[in-house]
Amino acid sequence: MTALIELQQLKVYFTKESGLIARLFGKEKLIKAVDNISFDIRTGEILGLVGESGSGKSTTGRAMLRLIKPTSGKILYKGKDLASLSESELRPYRRHLQIIFQNPYSSLNPRMTVGDIIAEPLLNFGAKRNKELRKQVEQLMEEVGLAPEHIDRYPHEFSGGQRQRIGIARALALRPEFIVADEPIAALDVSVQAQIINLLKELQKKLGIAFLFISHDLRAVRYISDRIAVMYLGKIVELGPAAEVYERPQHPYTQALISALPAPDPKARSERIKLRGEPPEPFFMPPGCHFHPRCPYAFDKCRSLQPTLAGKDHSVACFLSESR
Amino acid sequence: MQLWKDVLKTLKHNRLVVVAASFLALMSVIVTVGPMFVSYSFDEINLDATNEPPSLKHWFGTDPLGRDIFVRTLIGGRISLMVGLIATAVSFIIGVTYGAISGYLGGHVDELMMRFVDLLYSLPHLFLVICFLAFFSKDLLILFVALGAISWLTMARIVRGQVLSIKQQEYVEAARACGTSSAKIIVRHILPNALVPVIAYTTLTVPSAILSEAFLSFLGLGVQPPLASWGTLLSDGIISISVYPWQLICPAAMMTATLFSLNVLGDGLIEALNPRKR
View (tube, each protein chain N blue to C red):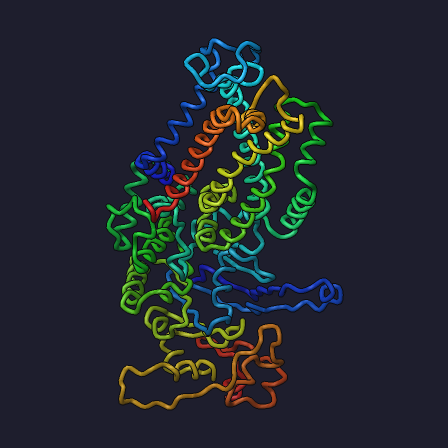
């Protein structure tokens, strides 16, 4: 299988607002939200992206769709670099690349009916406002499990799970090839989470859409993804087939994350790896491996040199697995 | 869009709004064609019938020069409603466009555009209008435009603030992601959601323009006698309030009823724009 979309050395840096004096002396604080990451997503594949808050997951997702302008690096969609295109040159590509948002409350315009919300992408790409369009919107609603007769209702008349379905219908309307699902279940009740995950999986099977599934719920990611990428402070520390990463995590950070998951069997006792401290301030990154201050296995090399992602199918950015 | 159809439907179901709207429509018709059907003209002086109380002959009585107050109220209404309408339209068009562009573009452009507003804001408004009138001519149209040109500043600030917060919303990002153009994003997503404070402020602009005009007329810069506006009628009437109260009460009642209807209409619109209240 070939890569549908490929990131090459993508960087997204933000400068922290600073005063005039700091600017004059060049002491601007740079936040490296996404720091030199590369990976690809194949046609019809679901790549799970996990990491704690502030690790740069959402920024990565948004930069892939050019909702945030990357500082440098390439975003290759079928070989075409999206990062170099202007907003108007980008528009034709938008129909193939869509997004589902975390918060089903703020992602729907409260003053538009469901029909208008789902029809918007279609209208942007040549559809005319007529009976046919309405029929198409009704079909989309049915596809995601909404009652088509609710087409003229407003978002506030729906529950969180239903609103998320509206957002999914909007993303599916143009039959995209790639969807960024940015924590699509984080704001939902546990009972509804499973429904939405199953809906996404079902649609993915039926339509063959590739997904970047962003989440901090490792088990949801394990369930839905083909491969998993783990992010820590703007870098990918581990990337591999879902079962591999989940069953045999190589990076100490991934190991700690997985050991922190509550076991389904209450009697099972597993050894929990406790991490020391907190993630550092984003503009005071530790030298060397970003994870070394919290890593139980850190040695001298970790404090001065940065490990790179290495390995073929299952790659890890850690000196420990290098020496192994 | 479905929103505007629904807003119209809600407005039609609100009885108070219907009454207010009909009153305003009726009022506009009366002040335009009414004076033609009254047998006196607004500047016809009759020294044999000064300060007469309301009667069948003079519905609102007469003033110290024996002029019919009813016809003067109608003529005054014409001027005042025009002041309110044109000044508000000018402030609405400039303010909303300016504020929306400034807020949407953000960054340095926003900074520059808003500092310009601050600059104008620091000048005393009515003084500015007076300069305007002295510089050009005491033409009524200049007066209307000048009043509008000072009230767009607040409008621009309100709209900009709204746009700044709304453009951060995820539904705007979603619209960008599905290929909606910037112009369409402003018109379909940002403005409808920014409209509530804008309408509230607009309904305040109409009476404040009418009152500013009254003040300028009092200084001799607005409407020139013998022409009248509601403002000049009130300032004339207040002199004799203890002796001939109808000279104040009659035009004041007309003005109050009109402004009240405008407020009801504004409130109705705000409510109709909230999908939760339908």
